[in-house]
Image (cartoon, rainbow, N blue to C red; front, side, top):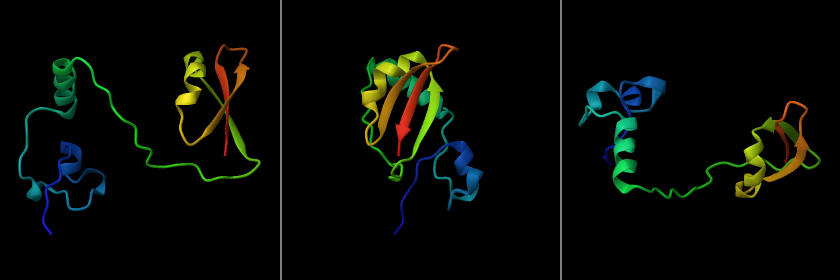
Length: 103
């Protein structure tokens, strides 16, 4: 089966050992960077509503958790994290939100 893959110039020039992507296999090379194409799309569409499709998860590890610090604004977004249990455990002395993730 033969198919075409759209990728960036780094991958197309064999960066990261991307299987099958070599300079000899390039069909079309645009002058625009990925960043420029995305910026122009957002400017044209005015609003973009991406959907999130989870592609990985943490394994369930009973009685195991991790504690991390992050921006205070993250406290209001904990419910947005699907497939993982996050608990707000307060604010650190340095003013960061302290979040616990249960595995």
